[in-house]
Length: 282
Image 1 (cartoon, rainbow, N blue to C red):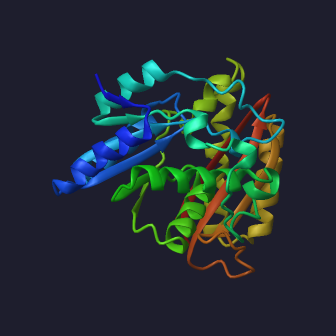
Image 2 (cartoon, rainbow, N blue to C red):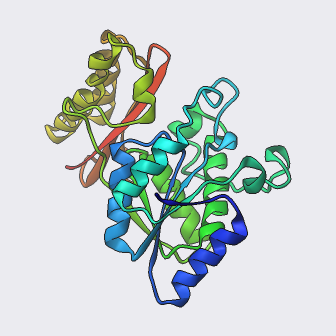
Image 3 (tube, rainbow, N blue to C red):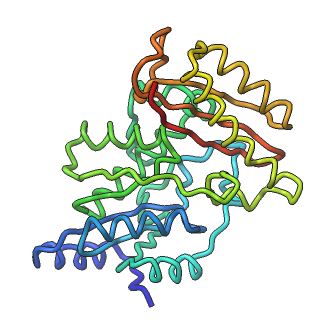
């Protein structure tokens, strides 16, 4: 069984003991309901560190008023078993009271400017404030040497990189590749919300991202590629929030299609909102 800790003093004692012994500590923050994609982050952290801590905390401050905080699945026992099998040494399982001692409404908030205002930030106001706030708290609690985040949440990774550098945490950030199902659908806890009819259609997001890459690499303007992507997804039954081609810093290419790029999509299929991205060179 994995060592599960719910008390902050105990967590700090365990990690401090490892650090005093000269061990490198890796960290994987999660919201639980873990799948193979999360387990791959733990395995990558194990390659980077001597001991690995994973957290499971469904963070209320990053959910909007009409989002799925209440129905977000909580599966702590299965999560603990999966983490242990993936090589995790310690599960940090804080309560809301531990994470926010003055309550979520009274919490000190962290806001990352600029990169949080576009794409996901524009469609989910306040979301990245909640992400930055909870990640800063987790970094302070765990105090790891290295932390692993998935590339599937591309904009979130950009926010955390900004946060880590600006607040000088001194934590090495490692970006893990997106783990996909056989048909290309990016693994996500939200995939379980898809109906049997919706599940095969959800793979159209990855196919659309591939088409966006091919269009830009073939010389088509980003604006035309984005419009075609929206049309394709809409025809497949999606309600599209955005289909965008950006530089890797998430700034629009502005007519210059040379250099590394990322295509990003966020779209709803029924009640389920899915996001994905694809990096490529031009």
